[in-house]
Amino acid sequence: MPPPFKAVKLNDRVYWVGAIDWTMRDFHGYATRRGSTYNAYLILADKVTLIDTVKAPFVGEMMARVASVIEPEKIDYVISNHTEMDHSGGLPVVLDRVKPEKFFASKLGAKALPEHFTLPCDITPVGEGETLTLGNRSVAFVETRMLHWPDSMFTYLVEDKLLFSSDAFGMHVASVERFADEIPESVLEYEGGKYFANILLLYAPLILKLIEKVKTLGIELATIAPDHGPIWRKDAGKIVGCYAKWAEQKPTRKAVIAYDTMWNSTGAMARAVEQGLVDGEATAKVMHLRADHRSDVVTEVLDAGALIVGSPTLNNGMFPTVAELLCYLKGLKPKHLIGSAFGSYGWSGEAVGQIAEELEGMQVALAADPVKAKYVPTDVDLQSCRNLGLAIAKALPAK
Ligand code: FEO
Image 1 (tube, rainbow, N blue to C red):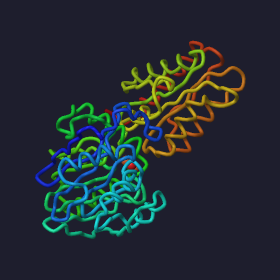
Image 2 (cartoon, rainbow, N blue to C red):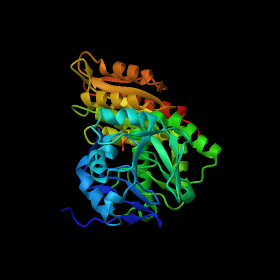
Image 3 (tube, helix red, strand yellow):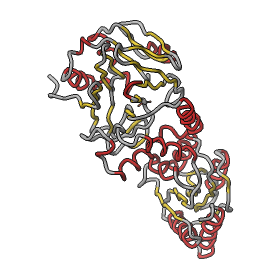
Image 4 (tube, rainbow, N blue to C red):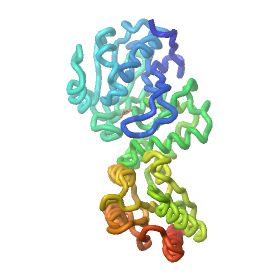
């Protein structure tokens, strides 16, 4: 028997019936220190409808929450907004038990779901702009390809102006509070930004187009119910505004210095670069890659104008933590950054050149000459690092 989990009411007809994952600390490579939730929703319309499910191990929790308001067998329709398994993992159990009259997914979802599971019923594909009547309520479907997967879609509960937004507008926060207005602003801003930076940054141009589309269609958003984290029931436009700002990636006077070090030579260089930035009236965030996770670095990069990367040379190359960061960041395709590279070496010294090449490859404009120092940086080397920081500060947008 699962514990006596309960559904949480959004309004007279809509309930949250998801699950709280208090212990998840890694979401495909992104450090999730606050855990997460997998949100599923129940609409008590004439046709009782379930939107999404949860990660497979949590399906018992989800079904208990459903059972706290209605017998699960009374669900008529199931809608899958997204195939990724944190939302679809519970589908085989749910479909088998509920035996819904109809099971809906986007056209690409209808192709992808059978490639993940053996499902006990057929899938009815739905397309962009299609509507479905639930009797006394109706839903409309909006394709949101690549937000987060090709199959992703939104489901909009028309009469309630309620958007089930799948991964979009979510964040990884486990809490007993279900609504954003119950959670401190500082947590929403950091975790919302971290989620955007690590999951959606790559799709920033699509997000800007989607926001325009929603505006053009005149879709009103009274409530946004994402698949992770809190529900936006008050001032839902606020998170949409944050997405527009984050997607724009307008450079600021903040520089992220991300580095690793062997005997603190590159560490000392990082601090000299920091001083140059401060002297040039820019802001610096210094991150040691064995103290700060790459997903936290990416979060800081989201509202920065510069990325400066340091590494000693190890075995003719850059430090593995530095290579890992650059590989991760390259995939997320950040925009409008300037930067440079620095690092110490003993005899061969390839790392700094390799970093500079990687930065240029990801369209980070080198706005200061990279700096290398042999073994232990001299005063002259440290002055060169300070000058690097000053040059970056000068090249950042004016205050
Ligand atoms: Fe929360 Fe793309 O899955």
